[in-house]
Image (cartoon, rainbow, N blue to C red; front, side, top):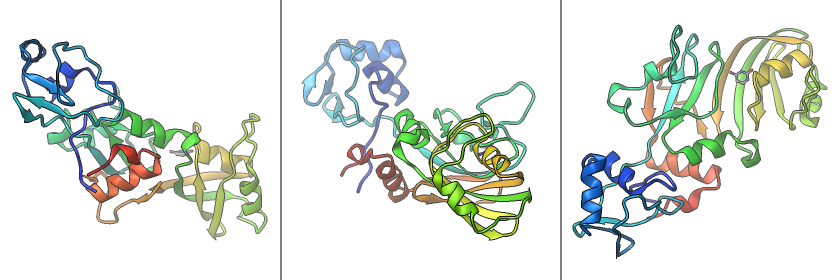
Length: 254
Ligand code: URA
């Protein structure tokens, strides 16, 4: 499966072109009004045209296919001590760890890890993909390695997590898979992302989390070659798998 050049769903034509290096907004408006831009074969003279959902329209400038800005997806090994945010007045944020050459590409975190949580954090500039991956409706697995103190894991714990835990404040969780790997260590798979969810699930069963590390999200596991703080762009095959996990495979085609 090949990669096309994408714009954000429903993005304005003039924004897509100017983000992609065809000039300032004023320049590209003039370009469009002069009849030099075609969308799916038809000349368009309205710079505010909303491009169709899905990022698949064929855009041409002076008869040549436009190289519209591509969606990018970054896998980061989030270290402890960084907020999952793009800016903060006082604390370090994961934005500081985005490689400098990608800093202007509009990458935002998919969901949120607590400052003290480590592991796989995805950042993307495809808002629809980010929304789907974080939304429980699309059932994207998140796998956490969790270290606890308090009650050791017991044989009936997997069933309790599997039935759907009720948190201390009455919040109901969807069924989750608990796989103990020691008395105070387990892999936990959840499909939602409630505030402090893993920590609150453990508290509801008499344990405190002492360390939390995300191993995987949907079809992607943290690349063991990434040291804490390091990141890399997803390759095409990984991005394809991610779009498939979010039921957005129609947006990827040859
Ligand atoms: N659950 C938590 O409690 N914290 C995280 O960072 C992620 C999931």
